[in-house]
Length: 366
Image (cartoon, rainbow, N blue to C red; front, side):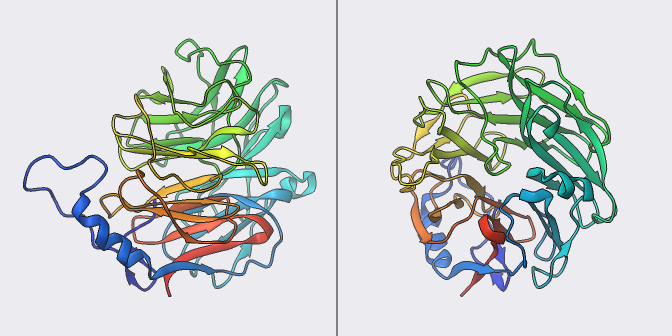
């Protein structure tokens, strides 16, 4: 969710209300040229973290406040726009070298982090004092489960997803901000395909929009699917994304929904040097149907985010660079090289990205 205004002012003008009938669901075509022109002046300003962890978890709160989570149990927080970072890593996570692949932040004090892995390596940790102390609020005890991603609808209601157990994806639910969790019944979940799983690459294999809608991205199976629930994870409907799969390294790695109907999917083959054709798709009907991007990103992408105050602009990031679309995902162009795993943007006009070797950036005008 990359915002309209960046660090030094608006990158694009906010979308105006449509007074002349129905607009293209992906955004007004007449605005695309202006959005593209303004985005040409923007790029990633790196914020030195002093760490070498790989940050696949990112919770952007505002222009000044962001959290990152990653390897070696590392969690960092900034409240001054990235000029300085406080190491707020949970001591137990550091001691055990946990892989923190997702973090959902509500403000500068409250955040929920997910550790991934088989069995008891999958855990949920919560802080409400800016990371001074952490409480483990869930530890998976099923050796067959492997949790991948978190999402929150609001500050109370959230979900986490595990790879299939007994042939179906497992959904974990909270209604008190992550203090307590319960596994939802699997009766409303379609059967998983052979080899199908989620990718814990960016914290974006499970995303939500509004108060009840949530989407789950898959790969590894014969086709890459996107599952949608309109009732906070109780029942699900599956659709094929069109993004190539058929291999454990291929599929949909990240989703981004601008609202309850308009979505993006990106992915590909995460193996270095492997081609990733048709690695992006779009939906205009809440994920019931997906159409391939006419000009997709040129390589595997693991993260995606909308610019919320635009009609059709979004970013996709991956190990080989950042791409931008201004027509709702139908076509993408390179913004700049440089490795990032995940991207997150906020309503006040900031956009952050994070990745390997402690890399964190904020989008700013050159």
